[in-house]
Structures are given as structure tokens and as C-alpha cells.
Length: 287
Image (tube, rainbow, N blue to C red):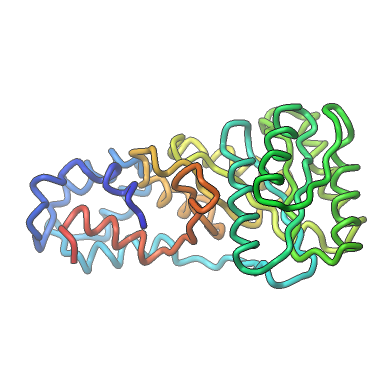
């Protein structure tokens, strides 16, 4: 499931082909840093550990990184359940929307898409192609139109058609662009006017290939509109799988899914125990 961990922690892979009972602190530090765990977190983890570290000791230290209270929002909580997908250009928003839509359809739910990224014509076209491929309805307009109007129309249409899940795209805005950030805030306000309490979940898409640099990006979006959870994409092509530890430690938000490919089915639920054990398998050999 977490095959990308082999790239992240493959530094000592050959010598670890045979199971070993302990890893030295110096080697562990190198492994964690090369996998893009940020330095402060590496120091915090190592500070709790002896010079020679067992699998159980490291498991306890790594799993503790995820030991924070987070407000997990279940997609079955409301009908229609309105999700807004947020993130910078190139993070994989549109592909992730297709994966979410595919997931909900497989669960027997009806899905509607909202093409709220009216900033780029290509974004509307790409999402429309996915809607056709997945056979789900979409509310879309032309490039340059008011994205908040798309949000309102999508939600009202979903209510009228008794849709279970609504997924709304947003422009790939940089958090430094004031006009675009104000537009995003307006979209959130309009969603609430269309249906009180909407959007029920605002998911931030983070590009896994960017490593720890995504943390400042996430903090900025969270200050802007309040992020409810994270999806980390492109982890099939990265050696920075350790950045998930840094993201969890810094942001203390729910990590719902990880993207491990381009196909609609390449979205997996993030499980902290499986993730930590995958790291340990690379360091100590498979349990």
C-alpha cells in the first residue's frame, strides 16, 4: 500500500534485506532527513530514543507524531455532503476530484461536480472530461465567470436532484494572491447561503513531491478559510514520503487520503499504523 516508502527510506535497503533488531541513532537521523522529515522533528524524535533503537521503540516514537486531536468529518454526515477542493496549481486537484467521485460512486452514492475553477478554461474542460468518463453530472460555466455563482448553482441543483455528494473545484490560487484569496472566502460564504453549514469539508490538496515546503502553504490556506483535512498527492513518484510525518506534526489536521497514481482508483485511505509500519519495514526488514 505504501510502496513509495521504499523510495523514501531506500538508503539502507540493501544492507537491511536481512532483518535486524536495532538501528543506530546516527544512521536513523540520516534516513529521516533524506526522506524529507524536517530537521526539528527529527531532533525531537531522536531526543526520546537511546543510541541503539529497536523497532518497538521507533514505532512508539513515530506513531506519537500522529497523536493529536483532529476533527474528522464523515462524508455520510450530511446529504448532500458538500466538499470544496483547495490547493495551488499543479498539486493534482482535478485528478483528485475524479478519484473522490469514483470512490463515492463505488460506495453506491450519487455524485455531482462543480467546476468552480473559472480562472482557467483548461480546468473546466479537464473536469468536464472526467465527469463524462465517470458518468456524473457537472455544473460548469465559461472561463472568467463568477465562481461563486457556480458554487450556488451546483449546491441548489444537487438539492433538487437529491444528490449524495457534491465536489467543488476551486482555482489553483497561490496564497500570496490577495484577490484570489478573497474570491475563495466568497465561495465559502456563498456555499453557506446555498445550504447552511456548507461546505461541510474543505480539503487541501498537497503535492507530495514538494516535501516539507507544503507546510507553509497549508498554514496560509488554513488561516484564509479554515482547512478541515488534507489529501497528499503524487506519492507514487517521490522520495519524500517522510514529509507526511512533518505535515502531521506541524499542521495537526486529519490526513484523509493519499494519491499514488493517475487512475481514478489510485486513492487510498491514509492509515497511520500502516504508514509507520511501512517505514519500519524499510529500516528493520519486514516484520
